[in-house]
Length: 437
View 1 (cartoon, helix red, strand yellow):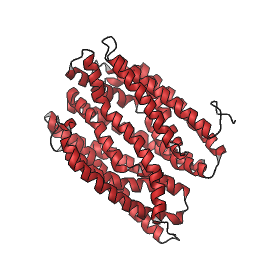
View 2 (cartoon, one colour; view 1 turned 30 degrees about the horizontal axis):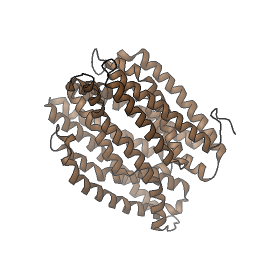
View 3 (cartoon, rainbow, N blue to C red; view 1 turned 30 degrees about the vertical axis):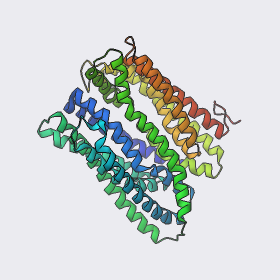
């Protein structure tokens, strides 16, 4: 338990720094791209995340789970198989992307080079995922923390370097924004993979045993396939959401260009502020997956119950503080992006969405560690259906518009949190009040 909290604290401290940098990045993008450019950036960003999910195949999670559950003497053999698997997956993903991405209508409003930039991201993410998964499972969280810092620090430095000397047309400015994003991922890949190769060399000198390819394949795919399916579902709905919301708003009588600007302020301003404290949840997630996997593998239900209590308490404390700050200082925070913005109201209305989102992230780690990925997927499916129905019905009404969109998002967050929580309590045999059954 001490190792868990030390690792979590390290990741949280570094993640705080990283989130501050990312907040500055979003401010820079808002000021340099303008309202229309920010809307276009946020509209295509979910597509980037979708490509990242497909490229990673959730290898960080499956590899970290394997490493946490198995003895060190099996690690080198497993990682060799994982690298071969990653090579095949990267080649297939790139081939499919080369054929499909340039033809997608979603790229029509962007420079022709943009889809090719995204294609170049695939091998970077795939091989970084192998290294990241090993370091997560081996509880070497210092390397994960440094990699996260390098990504955002490099992106901010490159953005400032490009935008400091000149202003660009919106189309070229968007290209620069995406180039800096991919270049930062490349730097993270170099750092992680060099450290990974050095670790492989150290493992070579230690006692080791071979593990069969079929066993490794089954271990990886049994976690990667359902988890990737879950992430693909999240990413696909996230990618569709900007255009879905725009369609609902246009149906309510809002002009299409205004609808895109409003979504840009919702995602680029309100989301940037509201998800800022989620760095704590993501830090807990990284440490929870191997910790919960190991404890569940050993049938240590007492540890799992204690861990859940502490995680829920930590989340409740920082989450309630965060939403109070957002409510009372919404105008000051949103003015960092744009003056007199409707994002002030969006931020305040979205407080339930953000608060319950902070709980959902570590609970997803729990579900993965407990082998309940299928349940997590079904929960996401049910709540997304409810959310999209509410968003379209209410968002299409002239009396609600963006307020209706936000209501649908809030309902889905509350519902998803309750479904995750009840399922976890049932698996580790505690009541909803975290008392032993």
